[in-house]
Amino acid sequence: MDARTFSQFREFIYQKSGISLRAGKESLVSARMAKRMRALNIDTYKEYLNYVRADATGEELVQMIDAISTNVTSFYRESQHFEVLGSLLSKWYDGGQRRFRIWCAAASSGEEPYTLAITVREALAAGDVNARILATDISTRVLKKCLVGVYDDEKVAPVAPSLRDRYFTMKCEEGRRLCEVKPTLRQLLLFRRLNLSETPFPMKGPLDVIFCRNVMIYFDKVVRARLLAEFRRLLKPGGYLMVGHAESLTGMMSTFQSVQASVYVNVGHRKRHRALNGECER
Image 1 (cartoon, rainbow, N blue to C red):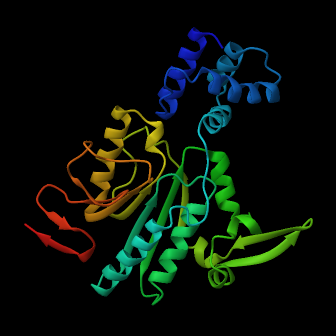
Image 2 (image 1 turned 90 degrees about the vertical axis):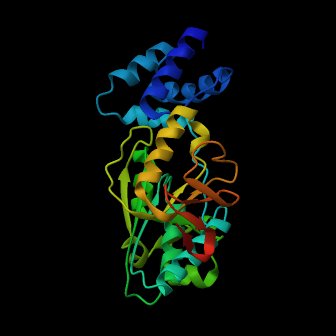
Image 3 (image 1 turned 135 degrees about the vertical axis):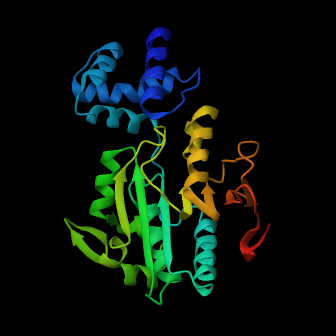
């Protein structure tokens, strides 16, 4: 891939997804685009770029973004966040809260949002609550996997056996042991396509918790700043934002206060939130 074509790919991908490809990524882009080109029987990178631009369905754009980004996910990935979430939900419930709204901003193939659903069910087991989880992703391909909600047995291995029995139905198909998500988890979730680079988002809030993990590493400071501004708008004062362990908001926005590594609380303009104990001062 020559420098000019790589520049055109960079510009197009940034425009459509907010993903910022640094200089020096020519080999990565070349290799990942080549797989799609072989599948489509396209000979040159320029032809492939023109093909994606001309595709009115947007399906090939999804394939391109999937090829560039890495959909690495698992049940209970970075498990500390789910422990924090469980503690928060229990504390808010004990304080009288009965309505709970959570957003999983990068659903990928569903392991994270279904782990969130398990955490909600376990923390709010009393049942007299109105809880919903919005799970979004830019890729319609991975959202289809979310909706199916069926995973290889080995994928569900991080889920404790007691929870697996409670929230999954075991079955075999063509010699494969599979785990299908039960309705009790599905009922909590709403899956929708959303491009995180296109703000403002069509949600009003207030949200209690946002999970946006291992996503901002793909964005430059401009896109990150817009994204954080939307998180601040949507989160209630005292609401929490979870990011990936490799990500940091240091220097990005003063209204988010660090609670612990990769866990932030929305302190708003007028309140300082004393993390996890729920006390606020004016």
